[in-house]
Length: 435
Image (cartoon, rainbow, N blue to C red; front, side, top):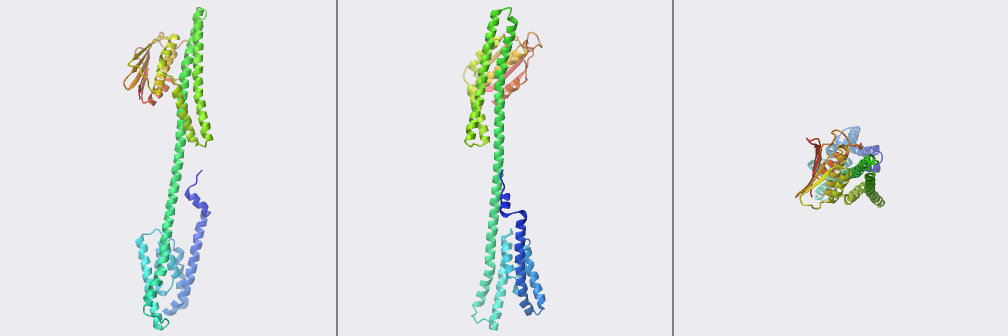
């Protein structure tokens, strides 16, 4: 499992309440210090203003306590600090308020305006106080000292907190931006990992379906011919022993061919398992292992599958089983991609198997057309001798043959059509692009 940036930040700062209490404690401490400072400064202010001392102290304490709300209302804190500047109060509050204001998410023009007001107010008050001190004789420096003291004091109380606050605010925004980017990247990585798992699962399911179609074609056709020959063998065993021996030999050949093709299919599966073992041992992710196994199995099936050159043998096997079948080839014979030839072969094979199952004894026509950019095939059987009757061998049917043929052809961008004919037979047609 992965953790987001927010969870990492929470883990570094402690429980959820820790940051809040820490901020509250800091603000409370600063407000207490400011209140003590302003209360102490309220004593000379009360004497100069001619008011009771407790009134000046109370006024200073109340004004200094404004730092408690510096995070929520930083503008108000700065305005209070500017307002009590003529009374020579709130130096700590002014410094902290300017820092808080500069570090907040406020428009720069507002920050600049308030900072300028604080600078101007501090400069005027300092200038007036220094002149009054020189007039009383407390200071005996030249006239140059008045503007110098006013400028340096105002800049010293305004510029450092303002610049430091701007720096802290910019750094905070940068860290938040980086944290958001990190969280976004983690979410994208999680999404990519989920999509990779989905692609791997899709590849595995697709390969299972492909292998299931291959095994269905192998088993259904070979075993159907074996059952037909076995039924014929049972019928002629006593009447024609020589024909019975011939049929028994054909059944044996069919069985051996079925076993050979099944071994090839199992070899494909073992090759895929070997790829999985090697990739897992090398530390490759499971999604990549699944896709690699599916690709390896697909390549093995493509290399070991049948081709159109074996079509004559397929027709001969059906003819040996008692089917009246004829093959018509139109166009210039040429080679195609392995997938195209294998799919064309399987369509004809499955169509002949269906004739054995559902229209035993019906005459069948197989047409193969080599065109410029495609190859077309059609398997059509006439009406069976006894309409509505199934094969004498009572071959079972799972109903997946036509579905498998359609999936094969459509996967290559071709067109598949099947259905009964007006004469009572059945027709299977497919067109596959040559490329």
